[in-house]
Image (cartoon, rainbow, N blue to C red; front, side):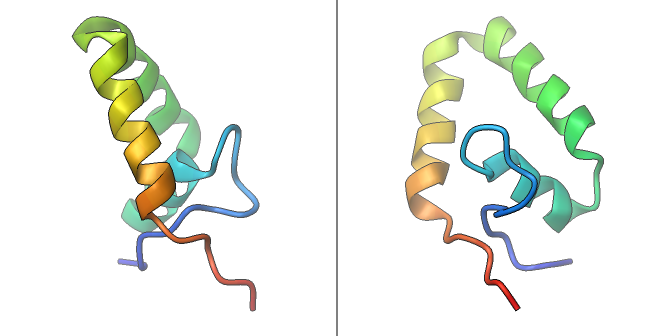
Length: 64
C-alpha cells in the first residue's frame, strides 16, 4: 500500500480521490462514482466537509 497523498496527475478537483485510489489500488473512476453516490445519499454537507478536510490534511504527492 502506498502512502496516502493527493495526486498531482490524476485529479479532477484537488486530487484527493485520485490519490486515495492509487493508495488502495482501485480505479479512480469507480471511486469517483462511489463518492458521488454517497454525496447524494448521505447528504451533501457531510461528504463535502470530509472532502474539504482531506484537501487540507493530505499532502501533495511528491514528484520524483
